[in-house]
Image 1 (tube, helix red, strand yellow):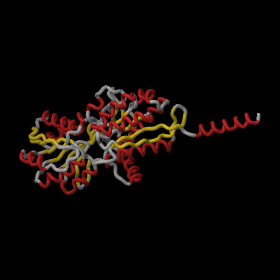
Image 2 (cartoon, helix red, strand yellow):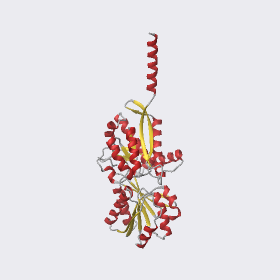
Image 3 (spheres, helix red, strand yellow):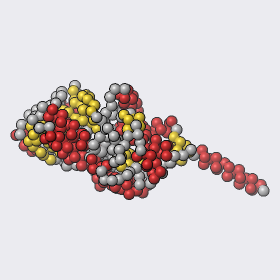
Image 4 (tube, helix red, strand yellow):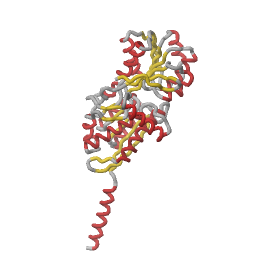
Length: 378
């Protein structure tokens, strides 16, 4: 009888201990935290860290049980092969959801693996239209795609910058090629002329050959489909060759890092870019507060996408809470039905493909050595 009493007491104690331990819900973030655009990948990762820490501090209850959110971080080095290897690792680990990848070139092949595993994936920055047009129910994004991004920039190049002869360079990645193609289509539709189309890679540092060819065409505007790590040296070489054309690009070059990489090669109102996203009016107060918190926490300015990662994590957890489960099969339909989620990047709703409805674009230029907002377009 004494042993039974002891056993009951031990069982009660162990049950109490188990109840005191919160269940762990693992969400993964994937981005390039090594390589040429590691500054962008780290920016994204920090956005995820901030969201997870805030949610845990506030307390999260899913299905009547308190949970602790755990962030699993992975580096895909902006490489499609490494991206798919990481995706398989996360599928095998049975994570509850994935926020990432940063690049279209890694997000697209990884999305098939997440789809097969039934794991929801929200990309905060992949803009190639193909990403959400594969028929996968697990695939979402919180930014406008290249059709909007490249199209807006193409119209702006002709209508506002008065570009008559325009040269286009792309880095042959899924992102760079996609945004350059949409830009070219819009230029032609607006009555502009593409006088040169050249190609480079996302790891190139010498552009003298293609820039010399372009110089001979005397363009008013040079558009680059690629990332800031390549755009910075390209701008320096344009200056050394005496190419004084306006320089344009998508959100891949729309970072504070570009200002550092290009240095004195950029004059005021020479560089124009569009960030996939943007807030205006009262919503700016929330974004400004986010940026201030981010700077205080990480001693770094937001590059581009951190706020979109932050919102993606919070949307995913909100769907789990509403569904009463962190099981992907149970919360996925709730995530897909997200409507007017109040994010720091603005209200977020998904369409039937997983694209954000009414995605905004922010046009920017470099002035006084800083990125300056020109307009928010929807």
